[in-house]
Length: 159
Image 1 (tube, rainbow, N blue to C red):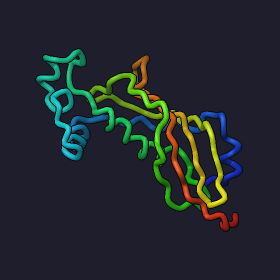
Image 2 (image 1 turned 90 degrees about the horizontal axis):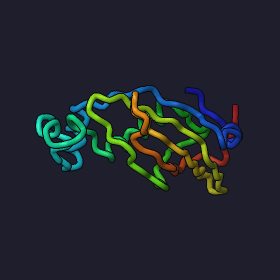
Image 3 (image 1 turned 90 degrees about the vertical axis):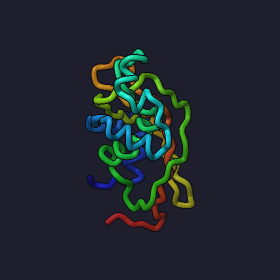
């Protein structure tokens, strides 16, 4: 993906800037996330019990697993900032888990560029309004305003 300039980034404020490809949430992903976070609640890791004891009909992804998919979906969807180096999470505003992601569901993210602040230090703060959609669901998995920081060399010159 071709990098974009800060001017191009600024001109996109107020628009939807991309929709990620669909991604399947598998039981293997859920189990690996459970191992990494030590959250083995049966609604995530025991398909038989979850089918019998929950209204979901089977296991569901951890909300934080769904949230963590944002990083990968960003790299698949949003061009990097020209002259940018590292990028880091800066936080979330108004994060809401709206609907559960059932095992085997496909999800994708819509990115709406809400705000860009270019700091003299070279840090660029970007606010995206993100919606992780669940295929064939009226409700999204989650909505949030996601704040990120990217360090863009203030001395970088366009070639």
